[in-house]
Image (cartoon, rainbow over all chains, first blue to last red; front, top):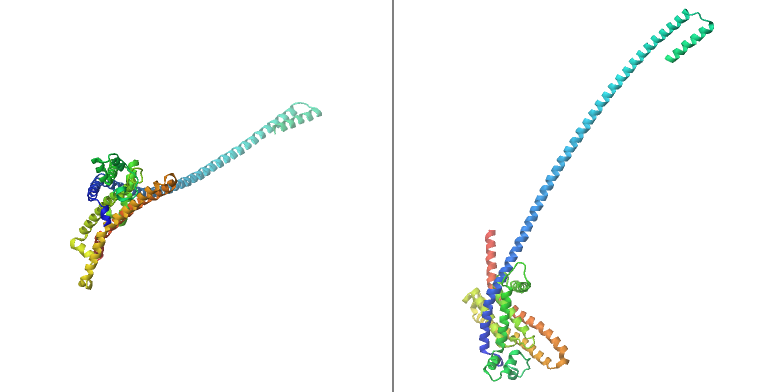
Length: 165
Length: 264
């Protein structure tokens, strides 16, 4: 019974009371507060994670929606651009055709005008040659000329013709 | 019991020195008589103050003291719930307080002029008795009065129950093992801490030459303080686990039955 000698009943009872008091105080002022707080924080972190996950999913969904919309818009824009380009090409072709026709008309008109002017000039020249020939003949007949004067007169006449041409 | 009373070498401590100073007076008598309780109470007050100030205003972004409190409380809670399951959280305050109290008393002995109150059998037995009473209460609550006796008889059925002697024998074995628990718990802790105190007291008598040895022994004692507190609380948790095993099993069975019903 050596062990019993080491025991002190007073110490034993006091220590039990001590521990009981410590347990009650710790339960109220420490464990209850800390465990509740840790649980709250755990729940809050879990909720935060869940909200982040939800937001992530929502963002992903929105992203997919926007991407789809963007693709549709891009397709539409591309089609419109294509349409505008086709229309532009068509208009350009029309303008080119019109310009070509107009140019052709102008050239034809110019050619016709030129032909008319040439004919007109020829007619005028013919009339002038006839007038000159008439004048020369008149002069030859009216004046008494030497052989030398005749020669000179004819040469002058020929020169005039050359100049007229 | 002092060195003079037991004949074992002991390190001087502040209470003993005060008692020697006022020798022959009622104060000296009081100090000598309540030496261990004084140290245990000092630890208790220190723990209460630290716990109160650390958990007074819990903030989402913790300060240094709150951080330490959260680490300690969270660690103990994980430890208890790891063994007892989520239902075991109700025992966390008890086991946690026990752990903090024992480890603080153990470590106090390593501070010069202080004494480890756990080197006294009265102190450790008081704590072990608290564990014993709470465990028995938990077991009685879970099994019921007759259920607990039935549990101690290893739940005899059929031929085993008819023999009567075997269940009674099993009951006797379990009863003895239940009764012996506080004794083993208290003696293990007390003997380890007491042994450390004696060893440190002997080493300190070697003077300067024994300083490296004393330093090494202090490190070992430091480790032992933590391990002994851990062992005490681990065993207490296991006792709770044994006392609440029936409850867990019952819940599992109920869950299984629910599952079968839902399946049908």
